[in-house]
Image (cartoon, rainbow, N blue to C red; front, side):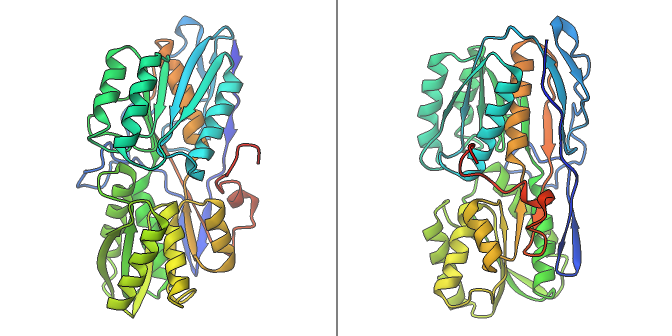
Length: 371
């Protein structure tokens, strides 16, 4: 029997200005078009009764906690697993891949293939999925590019007996995916709103720069932000613009918005590329450091921007943990054991004041698993 180690992470409270933002650990919604805040209780939050067929689950904790559970697996596995990233080259998915590779090595007997589209686009990702399905792996970990358009190939994979685990993003069809593992994206949006409100003294015009509609994770971040920012009576929310995951487009949006709203007080950028482009746009407009940015994700470029004062706060996910637990759940599913249907990972907020703290910096995303 081979046991995967417990990888515990301490819950962190990060200070933004004079306010403290606690680490959130709630449940993300199962689809990108949910209209209510997600429930804080996910079904199936405990993996119980997994001792059959020589597989034990030890030290498991409810979904939403900060620990990766210790699980025991047979030492004679011979499995093929494919990880289909949301987009290739994104440090978020690279960090997730590091978790996938480490879990496969810790468990043993797992061959991992990693693929992904050049941009976050279901028309590019679906042909990759079709090819992966044709190769017949035992399991697929996938970050679907669209809540509707990605469902077809994933349903075909399940029909062919391939175990599908959804990581980071999901599809609306809740029958797809034996397990869904993601951050509490609604809660992340709430935290971003509170952080930005604190940074601007709870008054002024704010906006969101999002990726595009139909992505479950960023839809929820936007929703959480919008609902929470509405609780501040002296803040005017002027709306959302979509960058299509292109930093250059985000920079152009900032330029156009400042022309129409020269008193813009703050911006929430919902993902890595949106935050990169937002900072560039403010720099080009001569507003660097004058208009606070709260970003989501923490790639190397964003960390540099935080250190330089170009971005004032980063809401960081735990992609490594998502990838690691994705492999665990995939193997349990292949073995016919009970899986955890929904797992929510929490997040931390980094600022210039706390970014040197190892308890914060350990969550910065990687450009390579060799780092």
